Image (tube, rainbow, N blue to C red):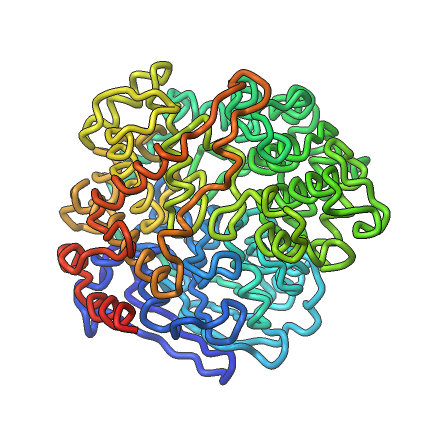
Length: 640
């Protein structure tokens, strides 16, 4: 038996009802060590099995749920799984990762991944238990929210420990930024994977397993896990999250002018103190919720929220929702934001895209592009908390103005015209996170270049390596060849080099489904401990160099897929607003330079060995990454 992974991929065609199992190593003994899992494994299936040019919401899209070779091992930080498909927002690679328990349970059930094809004639869900899978009728589940869906499936299957990944009404109604929610709390948020599930009439995937994962060195794993539990709070980021959740960073980010506000018009939110993570913790904290085999317990459940009409089972608001709907829309009503977080999780809506799209609508309203006639009488001015919950309902149900906003900012702006594109904060159709690119230039460049669209977890943030960053962070990245601190707003060739190296780290973490709140460069585990842990799980003589190549391989595979689907380098661009000075707050006057961004982009392409004009990786680069099978795809695309 292999160590860490199961060696089996579950295949399901929900159009025909056919279910079968693939064992990739029978034909390719290096399959798992080449692709590892997560979004790298997903990219493999997208490239192999999606016909070029298909609509992301058509039956021809392929939907992959993938753990990795280390997911589910008895150690902190190896719990995530990825959902991958062609994105209905960008038309390119779509992926979203989530933590919790679903990923490990998939492994315990006997599989490393599920590849789903086709479209069911009626709503269905897939039930997987100890190596067996069944397609079950979900007609009575259609219309239910994510929490109710989870409860009903567990009751129907007679097992309260079944782990359920499902969509809510947003996914059913094909909201382009609908998400997948597992166990009522953990969200695969970005790029519209919930809409892809909805387009297939797939309500949920339920997994249960009684198996265990073989590992190479259980004593070494236990030693590393024990050390983590004793010392993880010595890292100040880990301690802050443990003490008050990710929302505890809101005050720092806002006070430093690092968070976009009012649809990126500024980077300072006057009401931040009223809605801080500390405020939530003091007023409503009930208990911490750990992920599988992890003492960090980053998630939390609230109490005394009945007066807010909030079901505490959906968990406490994370930083993303507080930034997107608080800072982004200028909302300082804590009760509304807690309820808004619950509604997004209940209906299956990406917090970031929801908040950014509402902020877009607010700026359109304030500039006369949208009127009360368009909004059904709602006053969509910034700071009007009374409209937020109704707007979220309308988006999830595609009702009223929500039908327009459900398309995302890019398509909504195109439909509105009248200059609405000026207010649409997206790259490739995916809404920008609220970590402002003008104040973190490397992160901003990654927003333009990330194959999945702008992602605040595609690379470590600039402020972790500037003059004020802890020395520990610089010590950690020295092994990558990054030795000098760089100003957060700098965009020099050296900063581009930093992006290339760090982006590969975050890329291999998405391939191995590692938690970025547990691992280097800026959390508890060092790179050496990371390599040690992965080797102890798999028995492979792993090196950081090998992992960096996994990250680079994923980036190139996703790049080839995007190019094949028509996403050219011209679409690797930021909204024009980033080139306008911030109008208030601590970073008033800061802006990105269009010339510097373009020069940095060209430097990035050359460092990656990608053609600066076409964006294609060189054939030699593909072969060097053991992706020679993509050379013919490149030739076919260029010939066509």
